[in-house]
Length: 310
Image (cartoon, rainbow, N blue to C red; front, side, top):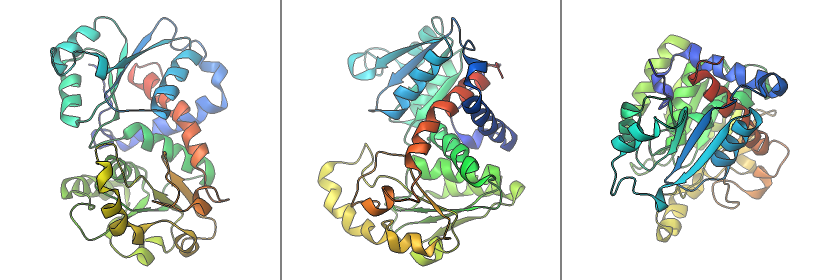
């Protein structure tokens, strides 16, 4: 049976932990995997812009002696002249594995349902599993463990990163406090909160939704934020969103409320003066570029796992 990575909610806690540990091992011993993807091809489908996703996946395939094909939806018939279903069936005849960065998770599900090779959600409106696996890898490298830690996430929480973080933290027994304005526009949908809590019941993690910055930051081991202007948000909404989200900006005062050895994370790109200040993202507690580097190692582990090569 073909295995896909569409959402961390679909995976077992054991699967998540295994990929994290394998990513750490691959990073330490890349020479052991330098031929792991020999004569295998990855198709990369992009409906949304990308830096880290494309470069990390393509570099990962190259370093493991594989090949990656970049396919831009803007210059294709996908979703217009040709259906997602037909594209999946056709592409599966050519390549060994597919990653897709699409606007809608529903389109990605249709794609996976019709593919006969593994499909990876490289970002959609509801999930960002690859990012969160790399984030958890980074935290484990920095802290030595995951279970029992507390991550505080600030800002716009009605997005894919928040949802996958809740799933991922729950899987590894990490507490997560999601802190946002008390406004439906910025709050996580209840379905995703419920999914994370169901996982957490088995691992002992705590999932907390709060609107109190002090409560969220207190005793946090990790402080995390993400863009206030996701790809689908019109630029003319910026000032309105800034006004509502500025009380949830991660600044020095917020970091000082967390534990003294707390680390700061942002999956990038980061806008200084928006979701965090320059003092924080460029400061000594920031690990955002270690986090970005680990996309490479986590992507390798994900692909090898889905292809049954590890």
